[in-house]
Amino acid sequence: LKKLFKRHAQAATPVRRAAVLGAGIMGGGIAYTSALRGVPVRMKDIQPSALELGMGEATKQLARGVKNGKLSQERANGVLAAITPQLDSAGFDQVDGVIEAIVENLGIKQKVLAELEGQLAPGTLIASNTSSLRIDDIAQPLQRPENFVGMHFFNPVPMMPLVEVIRGSRTSDAAVSTAVAYAVAMGKTPIVVKDCPGFLVNRVLTAYMRGFLQLVADGADFLQVDRVMEAFGWPMGPAYLEDVVGMDTGSPVSDVISAGYPERMPRLERDALRLMASEGRYGQKNGIGFYRYE
Ligand code: NAD
Image 1 (cartoon, rainbow, N blue to C red):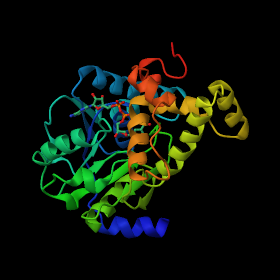
Image 2: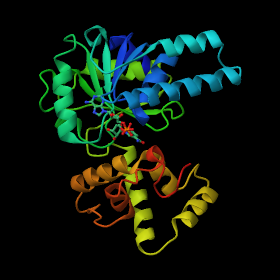
Image 3: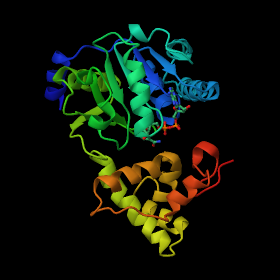
């Protein structure tokens, strides 16, 4: 891997200043991790409350680092100052790379990224943190699809080492290398994967989650399934994992993968995930999913 990373590093344009679109679970984590690793980041959202949550989460993580003796207070202050929360696109023309982490909806991503492209310098890397949508589909309205790549981080971003770098059919080698090098600079382990619905990890994970949802539909108790999978050795069971991911993300991801592989993974019509998403039970982010959070 080291050799591979070195080869990409030689072909990359280093990302020295970055921007993230969306300050939610993923955008907040990506901005924090980038700043922690020395790449200052502009974090844009359309909701002031999301920016506050994103900054609050970074502050909490840094305070924990200081308490554990892993960071000095001075360094923690520096990391926080390296995240600029904003509602507009000020300074976007100065960044080397932007990672989009907004809602998992093809039409919205296409519209927001096409608008974004006009605010950036011509060679700027644009990455989407999509969990499942094809990079070629998102890239469709872009003027410079060669700069566009997938960078799929996992939740919680500061803890999870893997990043899937997804190469679309029009993505340039230089953009892939820049994304790989940026992921390495963030302390992550990137793998370059093909552009298909769900990429690698979520194709595997969705099959597992569907197995779980079918078990629940057959009458299994989700609490018991969670305990069993923990005893099996997984860090958390599937119901808890769905709550961490968020039903408003998990449900569209499942639909995109069903649409991509209709014979292997036909759409589940009345599974617990879809039901909870339609009832606004989004999991940890709003305090109720399979479990309740105080
Ligand atoms: P989230 O709902 O926590 O956050 C999305 C944020 O984007 C919200 O704060 C929203 O206000 C903001 N937003 C919406 N439109 C915007 C715009 N035009 N400009 C700027 N901000 C905007 O969602 P999330 O869980 O962080 O998911 C974001 C993306 O990351 C999705 O594509 C999802 O599939 C992907 N992803 C999620 C997970 C996960 O476990 N939740 C894991 C990997 C990838």
